[in-house]
Length: 126
Image (cartoon, rainbow, N blue to C red; front, side, top):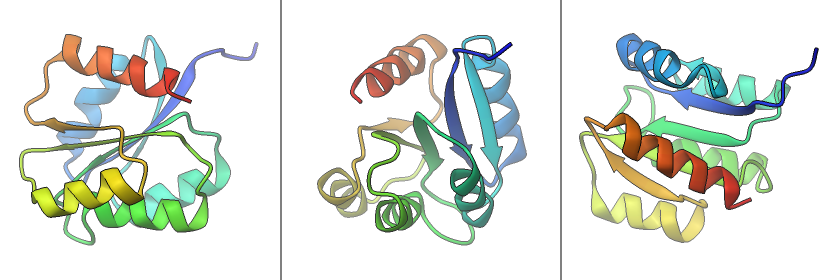
């Protein structure tokens, strides 16, 4: 049986954050997780994804840099892109809004009901 669930890719270098988001939203979405940008790009190359959520501050690259790579390789997918972070450089975030289809920046810690509403809006924004 094929699932009608939308697919979310979440990239974060902290395993606890990956598990938390997956546990919170797995009933409503198919959640794919990656611990770094390379894993995230590999998942995107093999899966249809409706929404990307990425952490901003990671050891290998920033979330904005990841979105730039996605924009260069697959500008058409996915239309919804979110950054979740406890850290933000407003110039970087502004660049992501202007150039890499960032839909929304969400500050950590996120609240389930607020993030749920943002996810719905981001996916509907297709």
